[in-house]
Image (spheres, rainbow, N blue to C red):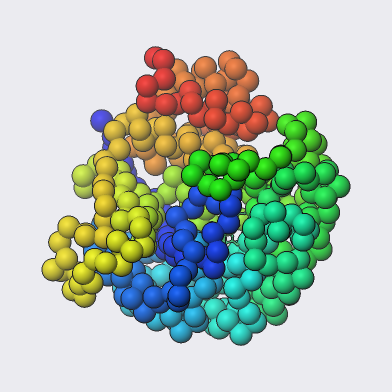
Length: 397
Ligand SMILES: C[S@@+](CC[C@H](N)C(=O)[O-])C[C@H]1O[C@@H](n2cnc3c(N)ncnc32)[C@H](O)[C@@H]1O
Ligand code: SF4
């Protein structure tokens, strides 16, 4: 029987499902925009979506907001202004709230960045991917290195002290020198945070059907080791599998996911996870996925009449074993691991509930299990899927 004593921090994720062009490697819920983005309709729908979910979080404050995509920066500052005002009118923001916006270097210009900052958006995440024009082209990106550099400079000038750059490595034909060159360039641009992702070939993408020639596993390992060294030398601490930050600059919103906190998800295909203390359970929910269907729903303006959220495609109450598995799926991504008390607080279960799996993970050298702390080892981080697999609900007892 789960027993929750406290509520975790609460974040808000907003999904923006359009991009100028669909990238061949991307399996996110993102669609190439045909004529223009239906900004006003989408903002109205997002706020309606939020209203229908408000009863799940009455009285709680919002710690962080993440506008992700897709490409949220396609939206005009006016549209985002009405959105942020609408959020403020409906939610209680913590005074030090972190508000992140994902931006694509090709679809933004200086004036928009400044205006975005003026709306209270205080963290920008730019999808650079590479500074090498050959690779940018192979990745089907519509920006070049010069535009990426300009976008970063503009973000600094606009006052974004919290600035993340997304870089990918293991690109088609990429050498160790090229991967290091990308990272050196990124470091020279003085971000506060770097997300360094290995390019993965996902089902249902163009690359899945037309696979490019990727570097060998040995080269990938060389790239990872050299890049980590470079990041460390530049005072970027690796705090999650792919996330590196200067001191105190960790992404609060994503850290809340990894610490199995709560979040509302609004927008096409967005997911949410909310702890319900009176009912003593955790509920997951997901919204109607295709933007056409999501937009096609009737917009209701009064939360009290909306009843069961029609933006919501489905909900699921997590069983105890699912709760534990999902906790480890997230928290074992954290390089420093977590206190056993966090498991108890977030899952409403004693740590003895997963004792067998923990013992197995420890015997395989995948975790260090101290008195009050569980931390993935180097090996555990390297074989994260195997490690988290030990916590699957149907894993051998
Ligand atoms: C959802 S995208 C949003 C950012 C923005 N639309 C852009 O691409 O500039 C977030 C990041 O996920 C990463 N990403 C997307 N697909 C990936 C893949 N197949 N392998 C590795 N990283 C990927 C990219 O670095 C991308 O910047
Ligand atoms: S990587 Fe970014 S720009 Fe490319 S399709 Fe995905 S979300 Fe859109």
